[in-house]
Length: 142
Length: 142
DNA sequence: CAAAATGATACTAATTTAGTATCATTATAA
DNA sequence: TTATAATGATACTAAATTAGTATCATTTTG
Ligand code: SF4
Ligand code: SF4
Image (cartoon, rainbow over all chains, first blue to last red; front, side, top):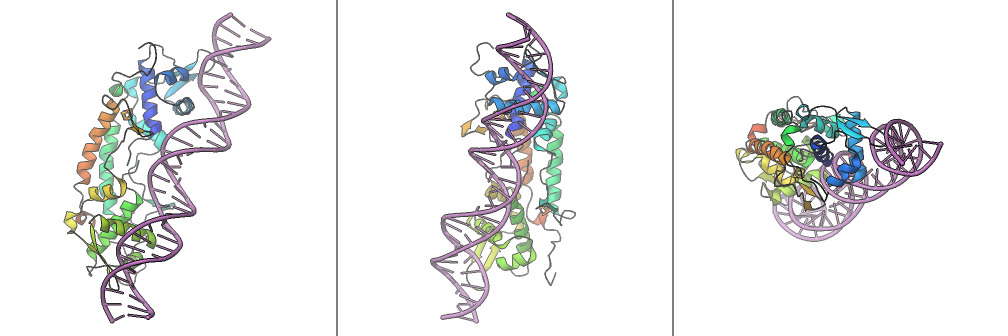
């Protein structure tokens, strides 16, 4: 019963760090020095974010990743969708077959109602609203 | 991002069936004939519900399971807890260590707020509210 | 005592989540 | 022009969770 997986959590941290960085373009190595996230995993995550258009990337020396949008235009709902697929609290699928009760099931209806609320909340959470004071782990400067 | 696992879904179906059954005491074999749930799995689920006090069980010929409470006293929140553990949308634990940001993290705060709503909804969903017209699959009578 | 039920428990299989490893490509700067 | 520091692409492995089986023991009824 978890709302966000580790990918999403890491993505939020990385995006927050980039948002607050003095430099616009931040390489993975710097994120790795400051956040507690394994570097290859971080790279994978950022590459996905880049492919999905949430980041812009620059190759070569001096390169790195940059936010594609202002932090108030980046929503948690989108990050969750990217890493965890569609925002559903119940798929109602068993061994690739849709549950035959899906039309009438009251349980599904109740879950759908909850889901509606959850989604609307998630669509309301922007990156800015998550910034706070980021911890920097073991790095020299602040 | 799923609110209920299969155990919970099956448990709801089984409890609903028992609730609507003419006979108070229902054996697994009958549930298995009417619901689309593999028998050994069903047995495991009912045994757990019994251990947790949601069902009463009767051994021997003519035995089976019976609801321990009236259907309006059985809550989805409790079933989820039984099969999926505590009602949390985010554990904030990595490799058995609590995330160092847990006190200040804004993401956590937002998720906690959503969680609060979800839990209160789940505590409001009773078995009666889920009864509806149960489908009976391939059984003779309705 | 046979049959029909649950109790207890251990095991296996499938799926999802988490994370690595490698090699290719690109851009910068000495 | 070449070393270096970066990303791109992709395939792989490991760990954890979820889903489901299998077996044997015990109990109750007839
Ligand atoms: S029983 Fe209801 S909730 Fe469960 S899978 Fe079918 S439709 Fe969805
Ligand atoms: S970063 Fe925030 S949400 Fe993620 S684990 Fe730490 S406290 Fe929880």
